Image (tube, rainbow, N blue to C red; front, side, top):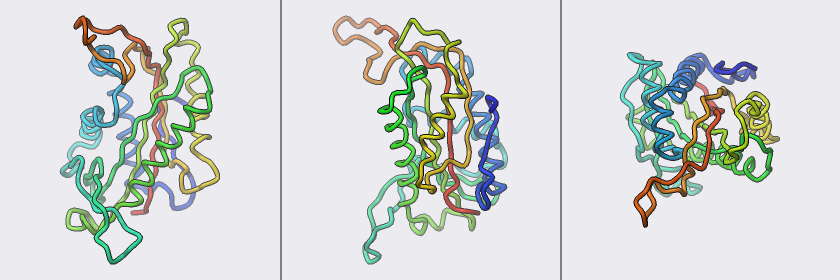
Length: 247
């Protein structure tokens, strides 16, 4: 496999043309923005971002890559979740993004996880799989009927999960990270016997090693007001997506 190259499933019926075109453009732009000086500078001054803190970069990547082919982009839009009881109105949830690309409406659930860049601990990988499953299940539960008037005739639900490769070990070097092997390990762990969870699209890349802070670390010490030390390094990322229903 090569870095910064989009790979997609060759299974019949998976990854239709418009979705492949969107994901290819988006993933490449996302990779470029995650490697940009502006993002790395922000990362070094802040903490490992969660999905909400990546909305802006994600939308920028959409605009950079798809431009005039995009319709309006709505974030955190309220959508009714399907209920087992067809007589009920269902429970209300939110979808991270709704937007049109060409003649297709996309509903996107964006998740962010972290994987140790050097160790193959099972527990972090289990957490990574849980994040992937959750993104798929949340979209699977959404009822398109509740937002039917907003959507094109063709609708695709698209879970996207970004995993940062990280480490707190200051004795390690970026040369010690096998990005291709780590990416394949994550893919294999996501692609278990439950075929409905297999990723359809994937990409991985390194970035200049950047020291930042864990989520639990404050930007300032509450007692002294000083900026707290960096305690976590980001070496790269892997990103996966799945087309859940055909156009």
